[in-house]
Image (cartoon, rainbow, N blue to C red; front, side, top):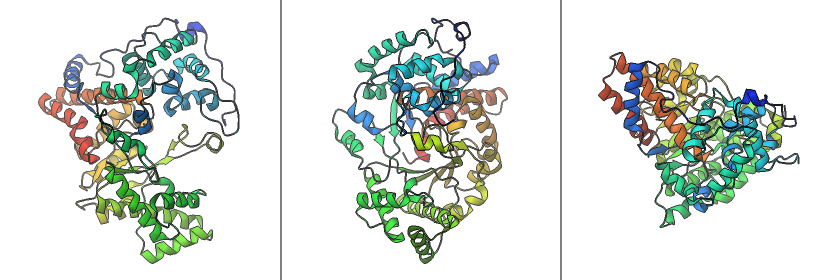
Length: 489
């Protein structure tokens, strides 16, 4: 499927349910079914329910808060920017341009009302998914919707939400405050001038904290045909000639300094795998020149990419920016969709990663370095207990990233706790990250994690592994001290 298919027919009205099916998330959702454990979990969840939210990694644009303009419609807010939503609708036969994604091939892009109608007609397809839980919470708790979406009530619901979104209480800054966000980290290109971050920092009417994150992927990926053009962009932004290996390194260092000056505490890397190499300078320069001249082999280009990732690890050991590694994703798996709609449109697919061998070179150099800190994420659940928990259980500089992308779902979160806790404990992790492009999903995602962790800890209390007092302290740390420490906040 390349986005050119037609929408599949949904089920009948009877199958979808009434147009007036109530939308009311259960207050005990995701808590254990066992009465004893549920009672403990309720108390634990209540103890952290109102803690401020720390969002150390995500994809909300700082421009949203800088401009503070009302959201125009529910489709542009909840559907089009959220690839958790668009990917599943695409799987059910909805072309991506019918979900509002710009189409480079020139096919018409659906208007927001049509996007919303399509979303509502497919509401039942989200049953059982983590996305459905987030959407229900967004609609009910943030936007005040009391009826489940359906094909029959789509227009009525659309008009209701357009009116609500015009209200001052639902503008971005007001939502930031109502979400009780303590800090929101964005993800930014090294060439970004960070003007929106600067404007927020200088605005006397703004009291929130929004920090940039340095995401240099396109400047490190020497396998990409776009890499030479990217180096030109970086040269212009940094004022450093990137025509040599050392020039590229200096340009990256200069931009990292710029980001630090504007509040950044971390870098983020979406490399295919976490393998790094540390070549002698002359060899690295030779590889750079061969890739730039077009005479390098594909393996040479991969080696240079890994060398540049290693350079960023070395930089982190010097400037203190935390190195977050989001690896193990086959990005843009469907080439036709990538060509038409670009990256981050729902077809990144998990792959297996060998962390033990891949991380050894960097950990031999920086695993006990006092200034180096890395947070490692994976989409391969089998690596949690086999590799990552033992690694984090030895190296003081290595932290376990929370379940991410396909794993940031309730049962996967529980499996994560089961896999790592007995080896690495609770305090070698990053705390929860929401990793979202959907602004209104932030509180829902954090509440999901808090409920799941409360349930997991309640089971240990019921089994007399932990006291309830210890469990409450751990839950507070997971939502406060751990993300602050892991991401240098």
